[in-house]
Image (cartoon, rainbow, N blue to C red; front, side):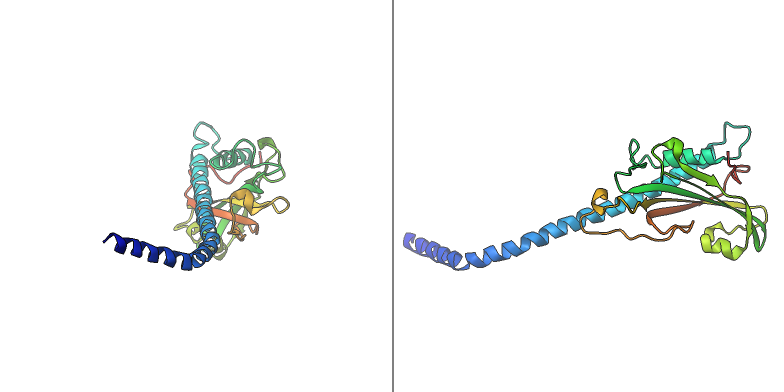
Length: 231
């Protein structure tokens, strides 16, 4: 009985010696595959994390827009009000002054505020306001502006966002688009935590084409908030 066990063990040992080279080769090839898979999983998580961050920023900006004028006698928002909203809404991802020059993540933050008010079925008042952290070392130097009010058609409104189309004359809507934008001179996907994936850029509601992650929220603003003022 004991001799049979030893004989079996010797056969297993010989079999292992015959195939251990193949096992080592298979293991060698599996290592880079496993590493690549781990990098892909990490990139996939990071991609959706950033999408969720900018989505949260959009809802936070929308909430602040609605509440900012509560304590003011003049409810109309100014470009400085919108700049403060923009700055505060991006702090869920950026810390200290990392959204400003020299942009250590290789991206900066921008928010577009597009207001419409229906005059009639095919005529809308329209105003574009924005605030960004580009070309600025601090919140005090943020780029911000409220463009002049102009008249556009319903087709123009639908092209921006179908949810901006109003049901009746006098109705108002605001589309708030938050986005992370590539700063071409310092952008490196590794700074954002990507190893394999390379996020693509696309066009935003304001026509800019260097958007990496974006999210839009359409709200009905409280009366008197818009059109914004350049103050």
